[in-house]
Length: 370
Image 1 (tube, rainbow, N blue to C red):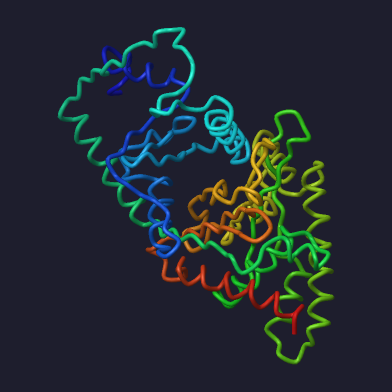
Image 2 (image 1 turned 30 degrees about the vertical axis):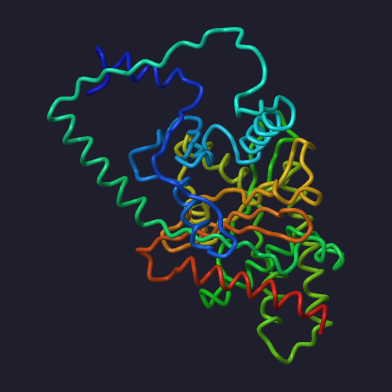
């Protein structure tokens, strides 16, 4: 309505034609190993900014802070995290490792083309349009302020120890999340884990359902002091095997949820009411999880260069009373978790759940060392 014609339309089309958006922020954030709050604030700022300094529906916004730190805010519909992570890793390693910089800080090479100088975009904003913008910003700001994001840098052990247990590190971590959630919520809940389906052309994701009969049996055993550690180890391996099989099935097109969604689309097309699909697809994912790979280009080796470790990124909770947990296995001995929830929910607390995850990982290791 306000941007359909004239100057506003031309300016909007200019933005829409751009490959991505760049935000030059006045704020400064950084990592401090002695102050976890600084990493929390840094990651939360990259996640949503202040509600008005990101172009949220652009492919991605490259955020550059006043102190030179940078990161990405990505719109999810066009690609999944590993795709963006791959491109970002390649760009950084190409810039630092191959192209390089001169001693004075300028990039090496000769300018071959003169870039188009920046131009300020013009807008015609009426009072009515300004009121609509203010209303939208108020809503966006309230949504941003409701996000509670905490980051756990778990350094007690990593996938190196998990592999000695003869199980998949991803399955091991998912069990820790199930144990943490059971302690936090007092019950089990439907859990989402993204699995890539890039074996197929234009493949995106399928849903692994980590909350299984076997994982519940393991968690229950962990909470029962009468169960021996040998039995807990057995239940862990059984659960991890089930999880790994489900993960591989999802990667190869044998998952559940995308097929259910296709049935739903067909039922809508045929105008058929399905009580089963209505119930299944309306169930909330109160624990939504995803893993991002540490490296995909083969250009980095965090075991030799720990300064190249990335904490990955996070996302908001899918359910109003749930958690969003993104994790990245960094080398053999570090795991990062990005834990999000809504401050408005009395059921969740990201800081509390961070402690639950930390304790769950320590408790699972203890069954192998006791």
